Amino acid sequence: SASASASASASASAPSRHVRVLLDALAYPLASQFSPKSAEAFRALVAWLEDLKIRLYPPPQRAPLRDIASHTWNATLIEYLVALEYDSSDTLKPANLETPAVRAQVTEFLLREAVANEYADKQDEMNKAFPPVTMSSRDMEEAKPYSGRFANTANDAVREEINTLAREIGCYYPQSATTNTADACARLLSESRKNSAAAQKDKGAPKTRALANAPRARVNVNLNDMSSGIDAQGDADDVVKLLRLLHLVQLRGLQTEVDRVLAEVQALTADPRTDAALGKVGT
Image (cartoon, rainbow, N blue to C red; front, side, top):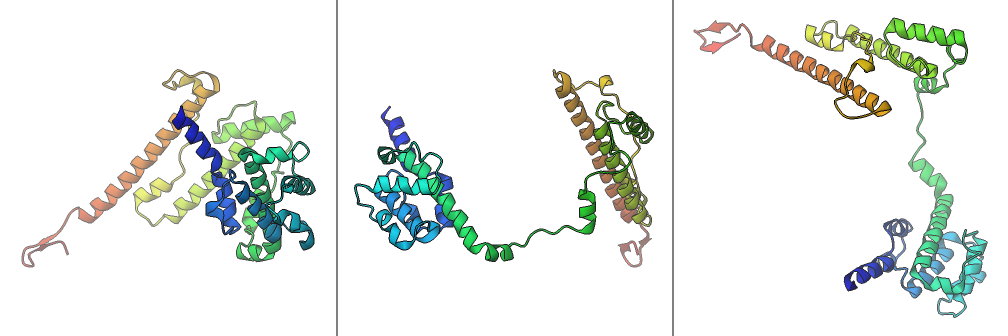
């Protein structure tokens, strides 16, 4: 239809959002007016990028690119793209550069080259503005590859030891994935250590808060004995069951927190003492 054709034409003439972002990042003065449908706008952009951003050629050799009215300008651009190692330069023909789609592809390539050169020129300034992220000694220690007593999980004796540990601490994991079982045990022990530290810190706090931070009891659950509640098969069924279990754990944690808040409020409001002479309740 005529409306569909007009819409397609409009979308072809307008640069992509990504191109707009690159133009703005490079502070191109005619960014709002640029369109790959306009040969003049396209050629002016290419000349500007080479003059101020890319600078592949020495200034005297840039004159053919600046001559945007030349009938040989497309051939000059192809030579320029070959020098920049543009991927499709070997199949690019001067006539192809008259189509907005090809111009859009070349435009994005040149903008990327310009941004890369801009960063190369200002990398010291930018790196000072955004210093690299540093890791604490503890973070670096935790980031090291695991090399403890369970590093060689291909060994039968090691696998048996891992599975024994998992059973002792109540960590359920498929027995076929020994490395994952070791990781799961490590996470479980780490969580228990954090919970114990939190409980120790809250020794002087109200009883309900201490209970909330106390290590949770571990219960072995056989997923085969559960129902997911939906029609799922294989791994998908197990995933749904695990999500339901996690949801129940979150609900239980929420209930514990609600109980804690209620207990603290009751401690403030229970058993008030009345002094009729003062005409008020409490002390």
